[in-house]
Image (cartoon, rainbow, N blue to C red; front, side, top):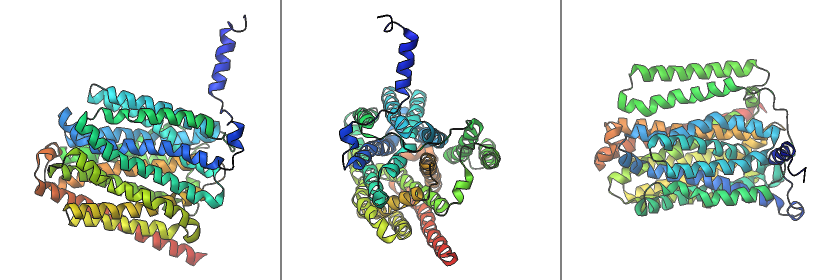
Length: 490
């Protein structure tokens, strides 16, 4: 009885248990399909993250009208989430390499789910953005560890297949997001789009606790690089603030130009600091490993293309007076095509190598964007979205496998964190750059987009997807060029 009432001992024991990765049940550990249990559990987190991203994208026009804010302001519902994710995911990956990937992944489900519920209950835009920040911290805990958990659990010969299945789960989240989001918007408004994460989060937390293995490899945490994390956040924030607000305030606005310059200075300071300190947030020497720079940069471009399209197309369809449900169903063509293609592409990685699938996938993605830019009809939009889906379905598993295969031993968490950080940056840039190109092409201020007619909005659609399509095509050509140079040197 005395021991039960001994609060310090009891609380200390509870604390140790909460910070210790639990063993899986023996039946799970000894199962010949144990590695697939890991993939299935990780897929729930991948599903949640992409479901949330695509639902929010579809809901932004409605949120803007309901809250009476401009396009530049409502973008921050998406951008606040992405900025925090970019700033924290690499740090979380580094911590996970030291304290355990399972631990942070499981708790990430809890934080993400709580943040989602708070988003659904938020009474104002300010509180909604604050809740999105909490949600982003949970997403960082999930995303920094997802690919690393698969890379450690799967046999090397099956890594491509495992990552391909994860890509399908991401695509399923993207596919259900527009459709479910459109239905919820039509029936009950935008608040419920955040609450759909609640059941998936509870299930994911429980399965992660029992099915994920304890971390096999760890490394010393070292001193925290707080200044590096702050510089990284500022480097991302400066350009994004400029791009999201310049369409309304003017591209020559002095304050916004100062934000842009501050971001560039912060990026240079971050690189200088990481090269000089003993325990950097990101070991830049790691990026010299063959395959990592091209893999990370092309991954950024793929997400810029994906989310730029998902952000802009709903505005055109809304101007065309399509219902929210119909918009969601049309957008779902893109992720459905990803989901169909990704498993097959994952199996082809070991046979063909990553480069044909990544470069070829980006060519198809660019072709789809240019089709939408040229043809604004329903058939043109659906065909373009399908082409993009096939291209990204080929690209993503191959790119993931190539990056994780090039990761140094014991650095799976930080590599996965950097991978998802660059994707988050690509997503944020996709929203901000596409928004800036869209309003510039349409020749209207962001606050008046919802009232513009189809012809005006069509000019913005052509400009945004035309430019982003050419950027994507140029990246594909660069991938082929770098590979040919690497083969010539070897």
